[in-house]
Length: 133
Ligand code: TYD
Image (cartoon, rainbow, N blue to C red; front, side, top):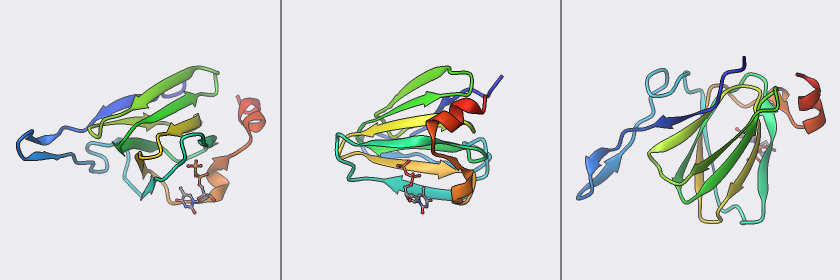
């Protein structure tokens, strides 16, 4: 059975008077060593991002600001939807999950990744992804 995507809660340290800090340490709050961090922003509302799967790279996506919808499909055809709208939660995406991402224009999506960027890790054609099961 493929590993399932799941919520990760990042405890907010602080209180409403002073604000909060959330922390992501590799192998502690996150189930892999963090090799890369990137963020996505200024995405027009009508744009669909993602449309790929990763062979080796595991990721955690966090909407540090705004609202992001993440639709996932695994190799068995099971689908999962996560609405990210709070900076103290992220979604863990195991390997081999096709993702579609819709972001509000003012949203900032932070990604913690287990691998450095390498294009060969991507599957960018849905038919190829479906054919691999
Ligand atoms: P991509 O991962 O396809 O973004 P999204 O799924 O959000 O649409 O990446 C978009 C472009 O950015 C693509 O040309 C590869 C490049 N890129 C890097 O050079 N390094 C990176 O770490 C990432 C994530 C993307």
